Image 1 (cartoon, rainbow, N blue to C red):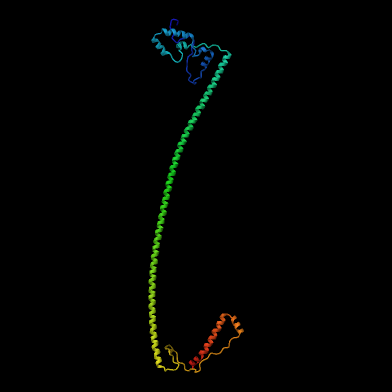
Image 2 (image 1 turned 60 degrees about the vertical axis):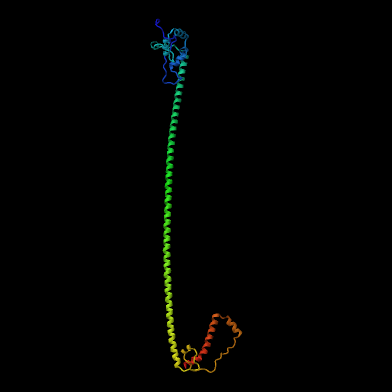
Length: 319
């Protein structure tokens, strides 16, 4: 190996293989890396030895442009590593003291706690984000459902309002039609009643005229018959007056011819009987009597006087 030329990135400082951790996030080192960093600063990737700088400078000066291009292509963000044959050889682990072992174990525990904490926070964060996403999704679903419900509700209310308005219009039309029919029936009934009343009035007037004409005819017939009877009676009375002799008591009126002539006439004229005036005591008693009794007494006295005046005439007639 002494005759072979070492690569440009070779150094006497032992290097560790770089294997990016897949299970942990940025800033978290594996057990091997953490132990490596605790043992010595020279094993850290960021440490560059003086020998490497010294070796790299003459090589860079003697290299050709083609080699420079190859070296640029081979350089990566990480440190150059030895060939696989060298890197695969296990490095001798140095012996650690009790304090260093405690530090290593403490670092491991702290790292595990930190990993668990980070993992827990990460899980909590994911769970919270998931819950927030679910809540947002539920909120969106609820809002969509509310919007749909409001839309259906407004549509239903509009439909119900239209149905109600249509029913009210139909009810108003029915009422107007019913009112129109009742008015027509009332007008027809009034016309029939008025026609019937006019007919009854005409018939009544006609009947009254017929009755008046009948009464007039009956009155004329009665008068005609009365005139005929009167003429017959007058003719008979004239015939009787011609047949009977005249006497001093012969009546002058033609109506007196129906009575027979008196057979005796009193030559002394009649005089009223003197009645003495009543005494005051009798007047007081008579005033106390009821009116009906006084009237009955007056009528009796009048009839008595008439009987007295008529008695001679009746006696003459009886004779």
